[in-house]
Length: 206
Length: 188
Image (cartoon, rainbow over all chains, first blue to last red; front, top):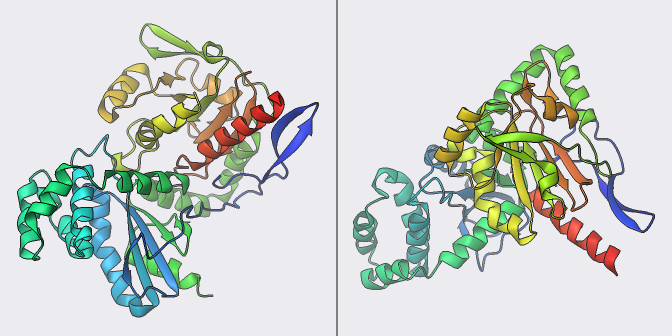
């Protein structure tokens, strides 16, 4: 429950009512927290697995704002180096982005063959080509992936459940659009630019 | 993008702190849990009205929001359209309300593929938003306020987002879960 008053159960005449226990002071706001912890077994992690700082992005490959945030994340990674691990989770807004699910499946299919991050980067660098699966396929082959397996897994929607699980985990974490970032588990409500993200990350060290 | 809106709001509040206090007053006045949700009847299409009481017997989510046409990827209502199957698991109905007129709503619903009624609190302007304490007088828009109402019409959870911050859907889902638990306790 983002930014709301503290809620406790109170029994009144046999009914359980949810009542605020205290009034929220003006200006005090607590951003929502990541509901699904980062796990190396499941998550796509770039950087040192045990880095002190964790940046999680819920993103949509077709979203122009995510496209704009992509080089910003690269800057953050460059600046913070081994202090940072970056995690990407799927949040395809399929009702407004017709190619978002296919693109997410493409990255997951590359992940199955150990090439998640090159494909993730390629998709963001070629957002305009998302409607044409042959572009990603050609890149997959260039990466040395088994093209037949890659295509088959996408066509069979093998990774759709995982993508939908990512999405629901995001919803429960208070993802409110794409991209949504979490800095050491707390939603970053500032701008999706390197400066703001770095400031936010550095603040958690204090 | 709400992040841009947010930036604007921060700038505004630092320049005009006395006015921020007024807005804060609205924050305190949002109807809280335990209160009977005021009934209303608003147009969802030019010749169709939706009343809150039509949904007695099931949970209702009310989402007041400032305006149609906020940018796409971070639009609160587009997100809710995606999360609708989860709301439906609780048999909950979602009603979105802003002061925009019905023709704007119709175009907005079509463009964003919204799968729930979007109601026009247009005449008298903000009348229903006011009853819920979710109207910003100075700006003339509904605040970004959420209410979860139970099957008897009682407000069980409410939330007002800070200026420019899109609340997401997590609070609503937690409130619906709590509602389920509370009703299970009541029955036993």
